[in-house]
Amino acid sequence: MTGQPEPISDTARRALEQELDGLREERAKVASTLRDVDYEGDRADQADELERSNDLGHLDARISEIMLRLRQADEAGPPSGDVVGVGSTVTVRFSDGTSQTMQIGEVAEPLDRTEVTEDSPLGRALLGRGVGDSVAYQTPDGQARATVVSLGKG
Image (cartoon, rainbow, N blue to C red; front, side, top):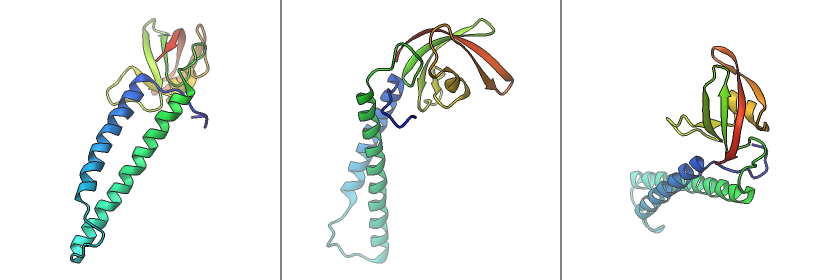
């Protein structure tokens, strides 16, 4: 990431929103188990209370992190239609003649073969490129090439 607010792919937005919903539910459950501050139990009770309080802090931190990223994505607006960036949907043709449409994202969802992360070899090669540009990138089998066929918004 550049430090500036960047767009986010639709897939990544949905994943973050789902994670946020889950975290909020978990936070509500944990918060409901915390006792009044004046409660005095044995050391085991106090240790358990402290652990739940720490869990609450971790949940709050992740919730804040996700909310910040979603706000930044809103500030950044949609991805550029001129060059490949985070949030872009790009169709590339590989040197073997096959084509694939994918989204450039910050984090790939497990088993989502249409999401390419910005820091992967192909993702790095595509960033800043436009339609018609050819890129070279490293794979486990050696160097590969691809050409940007079309570019759209996520």
